[in-house]
Length: 175
Image (tube, rainbow, N blue to C red; front, side):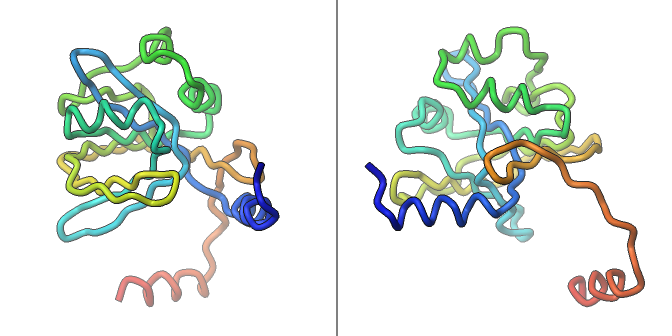
């Protein structure tokens, strides 16, 4: 049973809008995938990302076996896809009826606005999760609004009109 602190932490984290992606790999010729909302870019030199998976995830042993993973960054029309890959079904059931192809030797979901192919660089225990640091080997985009997870539901983000103040802030951040 969750403690009061765990419940408070869960509520606080529900306030954070996170991007939604499906992490994929292939092991023994079988595609594996799982929905995650805990991923981030980590480094530009060299290009790296991090993803966080439950330690009991069926995807984790498959990634350990292959040493690689793909990050399919989902778009606003992919909430059903996200839900399907979030369930604890057999890998073959998760991919049934889902258009995908092999890219960089990894399963890439057709129509995902963002794609990143990685080699596992390092693995770190983090409580009930394992954090994987991925060295980027390939990346591609096709555009579109992102799928986000906020207050325990899927949504999207739309750009606000840019103002002179927001352009100034962007220039300051890039400097």
